Each structure stands twice: as structure tokens, then as C-alpha cells.
Length: 327
Image 1 (cartoon, rainbow, N blue to C red):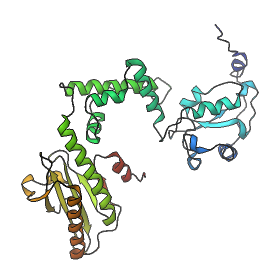
Image 2: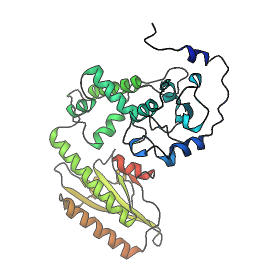
Image 3: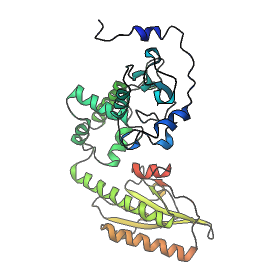
Image 4: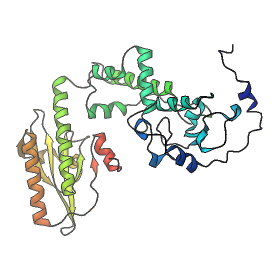
């Protein structure tokens, strides 16, 4: 069966007669930067030599012919794009320049390293006739804490085909299904938390975000408790003149109210619960005002904090990315 395709020239192209490509990567970028708007692409021109132009993943890149060499494509900048090995393998071998760019832009994703995951979500819906996001919502996996625990569940292993260094779309989709199965095994009642506890968790996450933003103003670090002291935070900094850490720790109680204590610890998991003796209520604005007031008192008493980039050891993926310098 030919399916209307003519592979004769393409087969001849694999007979060993192809010459080495002379066009340089820099020349390809310098050419296309004049014509292609990065706004509807999967890469920025500043990183066009590191990120695949189609999938947006940071990988080793290859010069891919737009018009294949076997179809008379020339060795010149206008006839190449930069693709990872996986996208290079999937790239069209047709005598149509515009189709290559239509194909590249069809995989547009809002962030780097997400396009294959988006395709895997689409694959999941085709297989199970239900959106993966709906599966998560049915189980109350809708908070940062829930998602963090969900993606850290122990599941079956994945691999990739020999000669292909990356997992394909169906493998990513299968990994999603294995996580759901692992969740259902761990939570036989079908829910991560009941609705009331979800509301409390959301309120804690919102307060954590506000405290992290406040901490940037004073170069303070934030560490969230998880093992011994869930729903707790330490907000602290090192004062060189005093040669010590000083800070505040807060902990949310089961009824949604908070208690506070002063501490020299950076990790709230190391603070006994009996140390939390100062009641500070449940209103976020009042809690933030109290924390800022105590930070100002520390600064007045102990001088300047150690000038370094604060860290955020919290569940929120936004603040974890800030640790890595990602805005």
C-alpha cells in the first residue's frame, strides 16, 4: 500500500551519498529570527540553540531539513530548523516549506517542557473518555499539597524503546494512569480529604503565598513543616551581628486558627507543638501584620540580616521554582 506517498527519492537518499551539512546553527537562527515571531512558538530566540523549536524541551538539537535533501533541499539556512531527536524523527518529509512551520507551531504550549505532557493528557482522554483533570477533581486532588503527594506516590516504573532516549506520549499517559491507580489503592474512600479539610488546606496555601511574598521584602526564608508539624511555617533569617538565626513559626490548628512562637530554628518540623503558645487568630491580614511587626522588631534589635537570596522550602511549585531562579 502506498497511501498516496512516494518514498522513492527518500529511499535513494539513504544510500550513503548524502554530504555532511555545512550550514551552521548560528546561521539558521540568524536567518529565521528575521521572519518568525516567537510569540506563537515554543521557544524564545535567546534560547533557540538550546530548546527544540517544536516541543519546547531543552535537549540536544539537530539541524533538520525543511525540504528533505532527498527531494532536492539545499544546504542553506533557509532550509533548516532546529529540532530534538524525537521531533526530528516525527518531522514531515514533504516538498512544502510552509507545512513545516504549520507543523512546528501546532504544538504550541505556554511553558517550556510541557508540550508532551499536554499531548499525553489528550491521549488519556481518548483512551478513557474522561479528562485527566476531572479524574483529579473527583478525588479532591485540587490543592498544591494534594498534587505534591499525588505525583510523589510510588508507582510502576517506565522505560523507553531502545535507541530512543525519551519516553513517548503513550508512556507518559500510562504513567498518569499508574498514579491514579496508586492513589485509589492508598485512599480507598476515593478522596484525598473531605471538603472542609480541603478548604482549610487552601486557606493555608493562600497564607503561605502571602508570607513568602512578605519574606522577600525582608530577605527572610520560609520553611514549611510536613512530617512532624504539618501546616506550619518558619519565617527566619540569619543576623551576622548576633551570629544566630531568629524568626517566627506559626502553626494552623484543626479549627483553622493559628498559634505562634519565637524560634531560632529554620525547620518547623524540629519545633515541639507545645512551644506554640501565642494565639494569633485566623484572619490572614492580622497574621501578616503580626509577622511583619516581629520581623521589624528583630531588625531593630539585631541589625541587618545576612544579605543572601532567601529560600522557600514550601509545597507551592511557584516558590520552589523561585529557588531555582525561575520567575
